[in-house]
Length: 477
Image 1: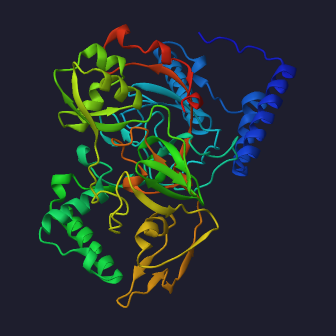
Image 2 (image 1 turned 60 degrees about the vertical axis):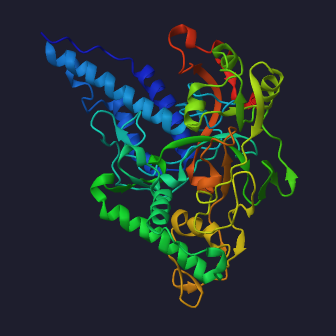
Image 3 (image 1 turned 45 degrees about the vertical axis):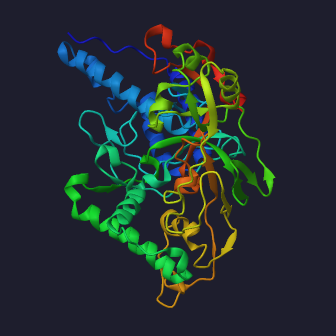
């Protein structure tokens, strides 16, 4: 037996409609998307005319009503979560040790989208609570069409120097689908190219054009090897900007600044940047006997940090940890900072700048509306910005001329702002030193506080880091 319709109070319904309409119009004004006005007649119908039976199933009896009530609740929850995550905040968990000891593996962050302004989604049709892959099914969690151009809504501020920032991984636009190679396509091409060309010539003995062509050949050789063994890598895919992996690092360089690293210290515009209080470097520790587990815990040396280095005796240490271990003559024979300097993986991989993770640059960070003179020597630094991030066609002719969109170019004016990101665990962080600039359209948000923290090396309540709960990220300097 169907229930009688409940009689509604017209004044109350009009009041609800007016409040919802005002809030909705304010939201449309904020995002500057007036296409949303098409929704207003439906809002009017929900509260006033009620011509459409939005919840027809409430008049039914039996299993249909029960099932549809759950479907209605689930759809509402997913839409609400999608809307909140998109425009206001989302959760993020620290997956690796690249920011230790500032942010730890197992820290869960409340990330504000309004701090820098939320982005209008480039791929709006996506499953809430997923980044790019559906769990279990291991397929894309988004539909590539429609694809909207980058646009950011006004926020509370801009990225400041030394802010900890969540962003989409720039080199994650092209991936090998096999899990262990995801987001490693470009560096993998160069590594495979070098391996397949064991007696390669010395680029230092080449002129600028020869050197540019040489690195093109190395990359092309590695790319062909991947294509020739396509099934081994389970194919190659591309991802839109907002579907790339989320990374979190510290912004140490802003648009328009000139950045240089000298003996591990970051300089911007010639001025030394303050190192984070808990900055870590890798040291070789020669032991007399094994360090007690209690001491490792007191010094914040995690098993994940030790295992990621994969070398016995090498440890990521803060200055405080170095001082403590140096004083333990009963346990430690010597401590020496690791000065290994591998150039092959350093950005730009096609530039052979002889820069290392501890001595890098100087490099000018591109700024919107600012221009840089282009030469074959500095082109590798800015090529990815011009070609991949700003969508231009770029080629170098056989006589050494640089062509952008078919026209000879002696300089280039950037359309976006760019940032330089680094981890506080300086010797164990894949950051801008390895994959370059972070464009403004990759910026996701600003972590505000740690809402949960659990030590992956310990289980149960004993692994909860109670002292870190609700700690403000801005207080982590």
